[in-house]
Length: 482
Ligand code: BG6
Image 1: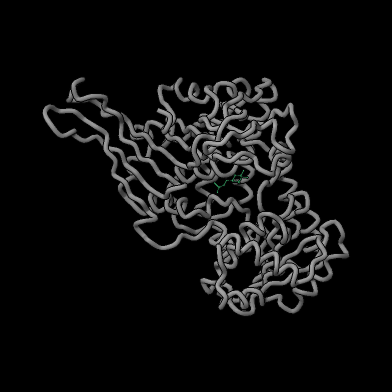
Image 2: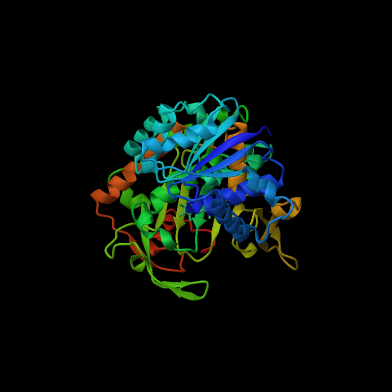
């Protein structure tokens, strides 16, 4: 690693304190922030460098438990702070002064701010000539509310940076388990012949959370589960499962293939929205054995809010590989368990030789658990010991974390270092983002046209009953609920 400068806008914000700075500290411990690198926190608050260091220390301590006394001083040496206001152009002079004379050094601008500030920040970066050829800009979601607003952000950021300099973060792509998904598909010849219609019956992608909206009520209410989770994380998972093998792991080769999946998604429009999607909103219930309030009682949420905290939908991909194979997507807050998983159910045997006495012959299933575990489980049928021929499902399980016994990188650690190294593979390209919005927007429009207000579900459940009806209509059930 060569020394680099990282300018963190929103440097005192929640993401910076909870995730980014602890991730940078861990990379420092791993020797990836070489001497001569500088980490500049930028925020509106008028803080001294010492006060900023104290804030960072508290957040790293909270995240890591304890700090390495021998390494901490060198990390502090790299930390700096400047106050600037994205809405006051004159306040950027100090940042320009800080960066002056280091045009050859890799320069990362991380915009961990409200998207409304992206334009102001990028126009100052452009005006002051700070976007050198060695510069990159990192954008955190939400990247727009819909296609139109996403395009405005892309144009504003694109006025200062070339597309090859723009890193749009989807932190799911930085997760070890998601990388493993790529290894599973493209590092093994075993699955490829099975990975298509005729072999796979259906695919489920679930990202379930037990938490509610916590302190983000007013932000979340403007967003909802479809935009917060489906437009990005779930669609990216779907892309990785469904994409054609790329010619290489080169960023554009990967992103070209993901884009083809997004473009092949059958639009869900008009009345089909009612048949193929379910919106839900949590009501009071229990989580982890404790009573919790409903969404409408959360701070910052209007009492008559119609925002969804749960979405289930049936996606179809119009391609030779996937014609007729439904992909069921489901995500929600205040669900029964925190789990992110992909469940691939294979076709039934074409003809059973065993007869009814063998018991129910459930199809083979591959479950890829992304979190909280990082495991792959293949369910096969085996003969149950004893007299007669009774078949029982048994699991072939692989616990990836236990197999490798090394500590996993946090998603932000990997993504931050990829930005510094200039590796765009795990970041969304503009056309991917556009294609995702193009598919999502009609769903929202359909909900508005057909007045599809969210169905209530009890906190701690698996979402509204309509979600089971959605998948049940095709003769299937959600994994974990059966
Ligand atoms: C974020 C969403 O992108 O992902 C949050 O804005 C959600 O609402 C979070 O809680 C889930 O991420 P993870 O890594 O905990 O699965």
